[in-house]
Length: 114
Image 1 (cartoon, rainbow, N blue to C red):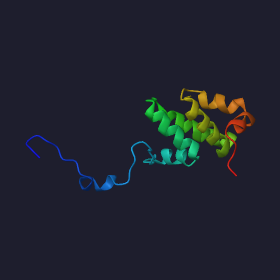
Image 2: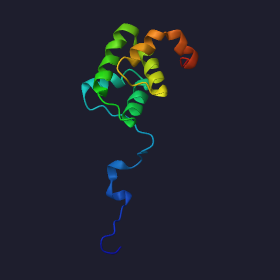
Image 3: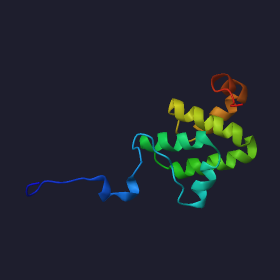
Image 4: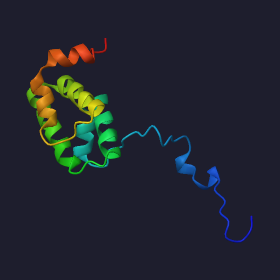
């Protein structure tokens, strides 16, 4: 290499081996994030999609989702988070609106896994 040229080699970044930037996996760093991600796969998808869309105040929405699990159960909230992520609904009150719409409607679009 000549002066001012960069050399990027995989061995320079041993902690990044095997990571795919197109398929991000959320890693909790706080107990609140761990509680949110414990809801299920819909929560993980919601977080990835919301962050890639530049959503602000995501921590408040995550806390709301965790609170809603005590009212609706993890499965229903996870399904609602999945729906919200798929249709890009990340606003305040969107998750509650999806849950209020009814579990039956969501099960038609996203059948539960057996």
